[in-house]
Image (cartoon, rainbow, N blue to C red; front, side):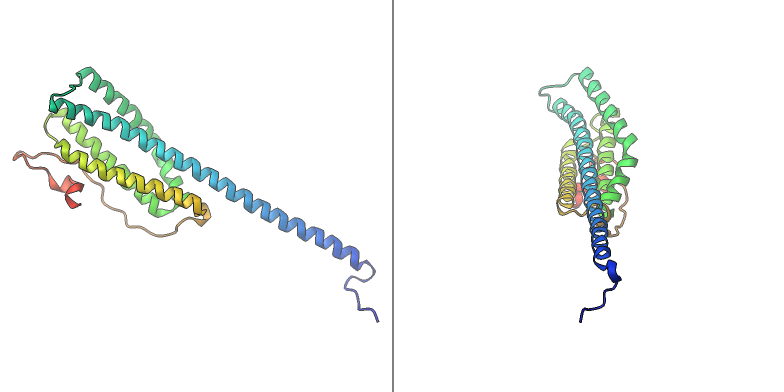
Length: 214
């Protein structure tokens, strides 16, 4: 005795059509999911590349200014006033690009990499800013900044940049980006002021010296 067919005389045809339909739906879903993941990876890669380039460019121009002041204090390989002025112009150009794009860039970091790296970008920004304020203080008043102290703080900044870049690369490699990003909450730290300002007594201003806490 034959078993009763769910769709009667058209049972086989309907089952075949349903099979094709389900295969198409599942296939489309998988294809869209794969496409979305690939798009997220591409976007995350661009964010990583963009952040690395901006930070690298800002470090380069600021380090050139710092080196000029150090060379002049050491009276070795003295840098001319015109050369220093040129380096300041380069810095201002890089700084303008940094400031004009930062709002968008940091929100993209938050969307694709989460709050932890969003806060780390913020800390890096304020370390760069404190460095810049120290250089501006030295420009306005020579010998108002302890440059050896500045070097120590630049090393701290570079360690944070390397950590930031490593965590971004690791997130991309693990696919923990976009919807799969780290959802941890963070505490926002207070911004730093200028580094290593020398007081009237010749002492380094400790509250503005991150290296003092290391």
